[in-house]
Length: 165
Image (cartoon, rainbow, N blue to C red; front, side):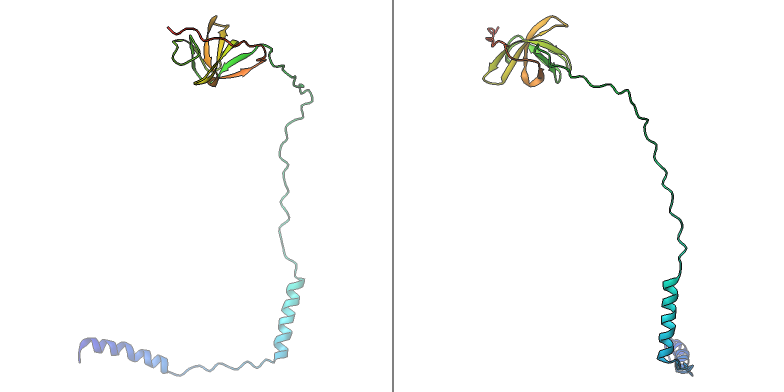
């Protein structure tokens, strides 16, 4: 007989002996249905009336509040300046005329301002402002897309473009 068959039989015989051996008898439940029902009802009632030990709620700590400031200054309304001004939104060239083809004569750096002296409507690229940079004393043209205008524009004269060099 081959060796693997002997090994197989050595394992199989004890398994059969355990499986086919005497079994223990399980005693039958001798309780009546009335007894089972009474036990279930008693457990349900005990559960219903039981008090649960829940922890007390955690007290909420009030968050700190800022002190009330009673001397708050009342904001005042700042009137729009009557003089029309431009403030540069970004660094932009000031030119000798109202178009990009004119010579660059200066810069208006972001945040710098100038007083509007006149305007020109360019058919190609829109409005140009003729400004006076009061802090530098230089006059020149700046494109309206590079600045923010404030103040009263009523009375700003329409100017003619200077001749190109």
